[in-house]
Amino acid sequence: MFVEAEIWNVAHTDQGYAVLIKPMGINAAVPVFVGQLEAQSIIIGMGDIPMPRPNTHDLFITGLSKTGSTLSKVEITEIRDGIFYSTITIANISGTVELDSRPSDSIALAVRTDCPIYISEKVIDEAAVSLNYISERTEKMNSDFEEKRLEYEKNLDRAIKEEDYEEAARIRDQIKDLDESYFEEDMGQDGEE
Image 1 (cartoon, helix red, strand yellow):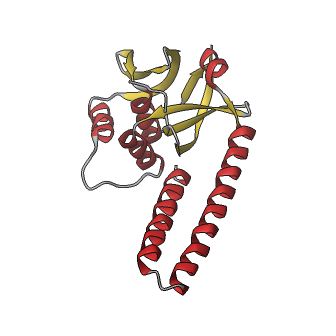
Image 2 (cartoon, helix red, strand yellow; image 1 turned 45 degrees about the vertical axis):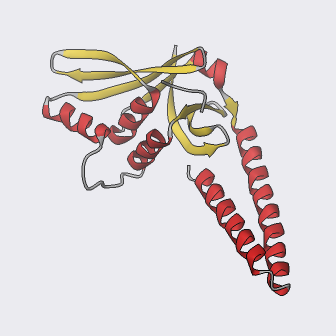
Protein backbone atom coordinates (compact mmCIF):
# COMPACT_ATOMS: atom_id res chain seq x y z
CA MET A 1 0.00 0.00 0.00
CA PHE A 2 1.27 3.47 -0.87
CA VAL A 3 0.65 6.89 0.68
CA GLU A 4 0.92 10.15 -1.23
CA ALA A 5 3.83 12.24 0.00
CA GLU A 6 5.57 15.57 -0.50
CA ILE A 7 9.13 16.84 -0.23
CA TRP A 8 9.27 18.53 3.16
CA ASN A 9 12.88 19.69 3.00
CA VAL A 10 16.36 18.95 1.74
CA ALA A 11 18.87 19.14 4.57
CA HIS A 12 22.58 18.72 5.08
CA THR A 13 23.18 16.46 8.05
CA ASP A 14 26.23 15.03 9.75
CA GLN A 15 25.63 11.93 7.58
CA GLY A 16 25.30 13.83 4.28
CA TYR A 17 22.31 15.19 2.40
CA ALA A 18 18.80 14.00 3.23
CA VAL A 19 15.60 14.55 1.31
CA LEU A 20 12.84 14.57 3.92
CA ILE A 21 9.77 12.99 2.38
CA LYS A 22 6.60 13.66 4.37
CA PRO A 23 3.66 11.29 3.87
CA MET A 24 0.36 13.21 3.75
CA GLY A 25 -1.55 13.16 7.02
CA ILE A 26 1.36 11.79 9.05
CA ASN A 27 3.45 13.85 11.49
CA ALA A 28 6.70 12.24 10.32
CA ALA A 29 9.17 12.34 7.46
CA VAL A 30 11.33 9.69 5.85
CA PRO A 31 14.93 10.82 5.34
CA VAL A 32 16.26 9.52 2.02
CA PHE A 33 20.00 10.12 1.90
CA VAL A 34 21.45 11.31 -1.40
CA GLY A 35 24.75 12.65 -2.72
CA GLN A 36 25.64 16.34 -2.92
CA LEU A 37 25.06 16.64 -6.68
CA GLU A 38 21.75 14.82 -6.43
CA ALA A 39 20.64 17.13 -3.60
CA GLN A 40 21.64 20.14 -5.68
CA SER A 41 19.59 18.89 -8.64
CA ILE A 42 16.54 18.37 -6.41
CA ILE A 43 16.90 21.86 -4.92
CA ILE A 44 17.24 23.38 -8.40
CA GLY A 45 14.07 21.56 -9.47
CA MET A 46 12.17 22.62 -6.34
CA GLY A 47 13.17 26.24 -6.86
CA ASP A 48 12.42 26.14 -10.58
CA ILE A 49 15.85 27.71 -11.10
CA PRO A 50 16.61 28.25 -14.80
CA MET A 51 19.87 26.71 -15.96
CA PRO A 52 21.90 27.94 -18.94
CA ARG A 53 22.07 24.37 -20.29
CA PRO A 54 19.81 21.41 -19.47
CA ASN A 55 21.08 18.99 -16.84
CA THR A 56 20.35 15.26 -17.11
CA HIS A 57 16.94 15.49 -15.40
CA ASP A 58 15.84 18.39 -17.61
CA LEU A 59 17.04 16.47 -20.68
CA PHE A 60 15.02 13.41 -19.64
CA ILE A 61 11.88 15.51 -19.21
CA THR A 62 12.40 17.17 -22.59
CA GLY A 63 12.77 13.69 -24.13
CA LEU A 64 9.52 12.58 -22.53
CA SER A 65 7.73 15.66 -23.82
CA LYS A 66 9.09 15.29 -27.37
CA THR A 67 7.85 11.68 -27.50
CA GLY A 68 4.40 12.54 -26.16
CA SER A 69 5.06 10.94 -22.80
CA THR A 70 4.62 12.21 -19.26
CA LEU A 71 5.88 11.21 -15.85
CA SER A 72 2.69 10.09 -14.11
CA LYS A 73 3.99 9.07 -10.67
CA VAL A 74 7.02 8.30 -8.55
CA GLU A 75 6.99 5.60 -5.88
CA ILE A 76 9.51 5.04 -3.09
CA THR A 77 9.01 1.30 -2.93
CA GLU A 78 11.30 -0.33 -0.38
CA ILE A 79 14.46 -0.34 1.68
CA ARG A 80 16.83 -3.27 1.24
CA ASP A 81 20.10 -3.46 3.20
CA GLY A 82 19.79 0.24 4.07
CA ILE A 83 19.29 1.26 0.43
CA PHE A 84 16.11 2.96 -0.78
CA TYR A 85 14.51 1.85 -4.05
CA SER A 86 12.00 3.63 -6.24
CA THR A 87 10.21 3.47 -9.55
CA ILE A 88 8.93 6.03 -12.01
CA THR A 89 5.84 5.47 -14.14
CA ILE A 90 5.81 6.96 -17.63
CA ALA A 91 2.56 7.30 -19.54
CA ASN A 92 1.87 7.88 -23.23
CA ILE A 93 -0.81 7.05 -25.77
CA SER A 94 0.28 3.39 -25.80
CA GLY A 95 -0.09 2.95 -22.04
CA THR A 96 2.29 3.05 -19.10
CA VAL A 97 5.71 1.67 -18.32
CA GLU A 98 7.35 1.40 -14.90
CA LEU A 99 11.11 1.89 -14.60
CA ASP A 100 13.48 1.17 -11.71
CA SER A 101 15.12 4.41 -10.58
CA ARG A 102 17.33 5.76 -7.82
CA PRO A 103 15.16 7.77 -5.40
CA SER A 104 17.25 10.89 -6.00
CA ASP A 105 16.55 10.70 -9.74
CA SER A 106 12.86 9.94 -9.16
CA ILE A 107 12.53 12.91 -6.82
CA ALA A 108 14.51 15.25 -9.11
CA LEU A 109 12.16 14.35 -11.96
CA ALA A 110 9.02 14.64 -9.80
CA VAL A 111 9.82 18.16 -8.56
CA ARG A 112 10.33 19.31 -12.16
CA THR A 113 7.02 17.88 -13.39
CA ASP A 114 4.80 18.24 -10.31
CA CYS A 115 3.88 14.57 -10.61
CA PRO A 116 2.68 12.84 -7.44
CA ILE A 117 5.14 11.10 -5.14
CA TYR A 118 4.04 8.01 -3.23
CA ILE A 119 5.83 6.15 -0.48
CA SER A 120 5.28 2.59 0.68
CA GLU A 121 3.71 2.17 4.12
CA LYS A 122 6.43 -0.40 4.82
CA VAL A 123 9.12 2.23 4.14
CA ILE A 124 7.28 4.67 6.42
CA ASP A 125 7.16 2.04 9.18
CA GLU A 126 10.88 1.27 8.78
CA ALA A 127 12.35 4.74 8.36
CA ALA A 128 10.00 7.56 9.38
CA VAL A 129 11.20 10.09 11.92
CA SER A 130 8.84 12.28 13.94
CA LEU A 131 8.63 15.89 12.73
CA ASN A 132 8.74 16.91 16.41
CA TYR A 133 12.12 15.17 16.74
CA ILE A 134 13.39 16.85 13.57
CA SER A 135 12.21 20.26 14.83
CA GLU A 136 13.79 19.71 18.27
CA ARG A 137 17.06 18.68 16.66
CA THR A 138 17.00 21.75 14.41
CA GLU A 139 16.41 24.01 17.43
CA LYS A 140 19.33 22.37 19.25
CA MET A 141 21.56 22.83 16.18
CA ASN A 142 20.60 26.52 16.08
CA SER A 143 21.32 26.91 19.79
CA ASP A 144 24.66 25.09 19.52
CA PHE A 145 25.62 27.25 16.54
CA GLU A 146 24.80 30.49 18.33
CA GLU A 147 26.68 29.41 21.47
CA LYS A 148 29.78 28.37 19.52
CA ARG A 149 29.74 31.52 17.36
CA LEU A 150 29.48 33.73 20.45
CA GLU A 151 32.46 31.93 22.00
CA TYR A 152 34.51 32.43 18.79
CA GLU A 153 33.59 36.13 18.68
CA LYS A 154 34.72 36.63 22.30
CA ASN A 155 38.01 34.87 21.55
CA LEU A 156 38.45 36.98 18.42
CA ASP A 157 37.90 40.21 20.39
CA ARG A 158 40.41 39.06 23.00
CA ALA A 159 43.02 38.17 20.34
CA ILE A 160 42.61 41.58 18.69
CA LYS A 161 42.91 43.42 22.01
CA GLU A 162 46.08 41.44 22.76
CA GLU A 163 47.31 42.23 19.22
CA ASP A 164 47.73 38.52 18.48
CA TYR A 165 46.78 38.88 14.84
CA GLU A 166 47.85 35.38 13.86
CA GLU A 167 45.43 33.94 16.43
CA ALA A 168 42.76 36.44 15.31
CA ALA A 169 43.13 35.27 11.70
CA ARG A 170 42.83 31.62 12.80
CA ILE A 171 39.66 32.39 14.78
CA ARG A 172 38.23 34.43 11.89
CA ASP A 173 38.69 31.35 9.66
CA GLN A 174 36.95 29.17 12.28
CA ILE A 175 33.99 31.59 12.30
CA LYS A 176 33.86 31.50 8.50
CA ASP A 177 33.91 27.66 8.48
CA LEU A 178 31.24 27.53 11.18
CA ASP A 179 28.99 29.94 9.25
CA GLU A 180 29.44 28.03 5.99
CA SER A 181 28.63 24.67 7.56
CA TYR A 182 25.59 26.10 9.36
CA PHE A 183 24.12 27.75 6.28
CA GLU A 184 24.83 24.66 4.20
CA GLU A 185 22.89 22.56 6.74
CA ASP A 186 20.10 25.14 6.82
CA MET A 187 19.82 24.86 3.01
CA GLY A 188 18.51 22.23 2.58
CA GLN A 189 22.43 9.81 3.92
CA ASP A 190 22.48 5.80 4.31
CA GLY A 191 22.57 5.22 0.63
CA GLU A 192 20.41 4.92 -2.40
CA GLU A 193 22.76 3.58 -5.04
